[in-house]
Length: 113
Image (cartoon, rainbow, N blue to C red; front, side, top):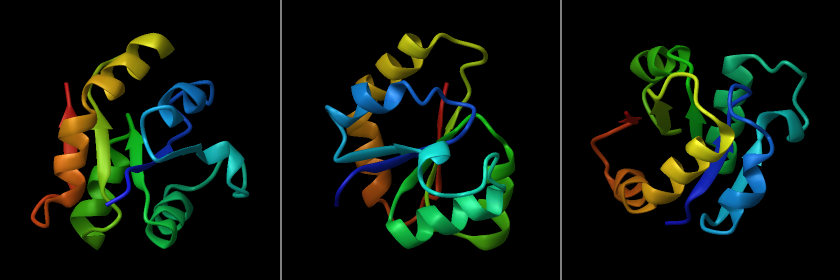
């Protein structure tokens, strides 16, 4: 399975380049043709159609997953306010866990602390 990430608005668009070097695809919600700011349901539907994993700090996606099920899957960052470089390094170091999560049929949310 390809690891395709869709970064929510609360993650810097500048992270796309660094993450694309390791993940199969990485895009930011501000660059996919949705209204800015995009509604959570629009982001959800885009990720579903494109086979992407949503990466966010927003608990609203956890609630969407609870009500709608999955896919799409959601990586929920529980890191608080951190630098862009910190977030990038954390995601890069978690690639193996994200890959396992992407392939797991029983989980829709991966929380990274």
